[in-house]
Image 1 (spheres, rainbow, N blue to C red):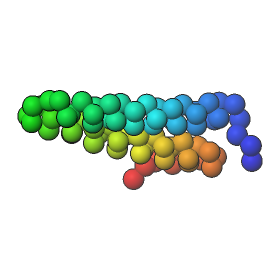
Image 2 (cartoon, one colour; image 1 turned 90 degrees about the vertical axis):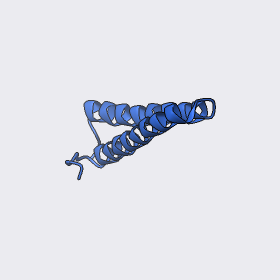
Image 3 (cartoon, helix red, strand yellow; image 1 turned 45 degrees about the horizontal axis):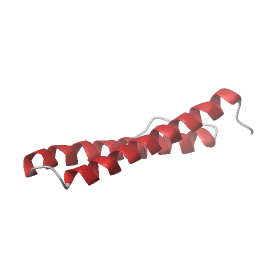
Image 4 (spheres, rainbow, N blue to C red; image 1 turned 45 degrees about the vertical axis):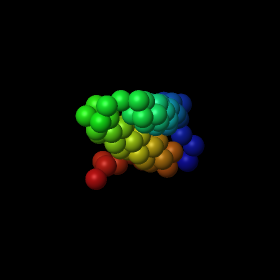
Length: 73
């Protein structure tokens, strides 16, 4: 069953947000190299959150592509 325009846009938006989260995480990962250890640990926590969000967004994009969105476990 083909996706309607709104569903296609939602899928694309989820995928773009996932990409943006991963890109931000990569930039922060590079910045950690120049920070004192205390700051680096805090940034590492933020990176983990961004990667987790990216995984969830990518999963939502895939589920939207399949024509259904279910609650994430």
